[in-house]
Image 1 (tube, protein in one colour):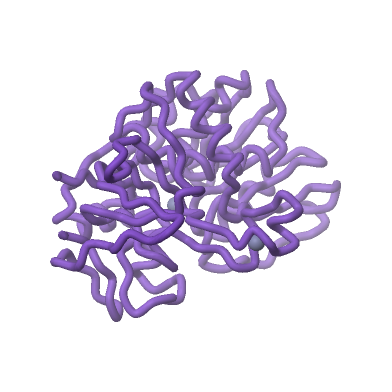
Image 2: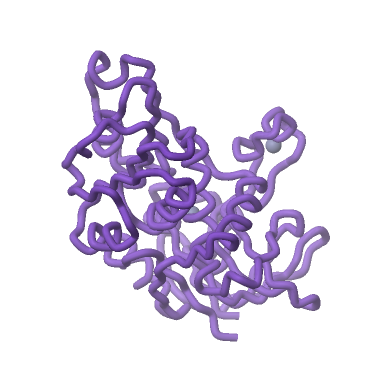
Length: 319
Ligand SMILES: [Zn+2]
Ligand SMILES: [Zn+2]
């Protein structure tokens, strides 16, 4: 089969063996696979390699071979089910997790293998292209709102406006929240305006009112500090980024005092996935997508890196 492979730091499309069926797994014929910023960190080596060679991609839409059911696969490809976190309902923090497209092969390929208990049947209301970006960007954005403790009607800041934020804004509007967006790039600001943000500013602009919650999406510690500076007392910043350049020094007295909190958002649970996909179908969530062929996987990653994609990038796989 054709697949985009990262091997010894080199990334390219080539012919590889189709995965062999395994017990408790399903073989998927891939229809589409979303491109996530995490893929970029993997291919750039910012996340340490876990295998000699790996096929990235963890927002897979595919049909179960021999059965036909259309399912989605996300970043969390499996857990041990036995560690204290799994037993405590926090499988996103599992001590021995499997990550799709990182510790096992992912969906930048014609076929992919997935654990049968970690695939999610997709509602018919969500077509392939529009379902793919929901599977990580959407679910993790949704989890970020939960981690930030967003309540209906609150003022919420989104710092950065890529794939995940442009889905989170729809969820926030469904919850009757006011959304304030600070982001670099004129096209991202225009997109935020067109999606109904109450206020839109540049990455260094401060929202005009104190915010109850904020979620940061840029892989930048400076952005986290800016978000912290926008909060009311008791407010929460949730960091939706698996990798930050660094965390700069900041002034405790003015920025964190007053029971403000900074929380990271790690991975996702299957409950997050199911709850979010049901909500997405209910509110008719339709991501803005830009498509790339499998042969152009490197260009898709490059476009995400340059912030040149409005909404989400999706790789379509021709069968
Ligand atoms: Zn576990
Ligand atoms: Zn992701």
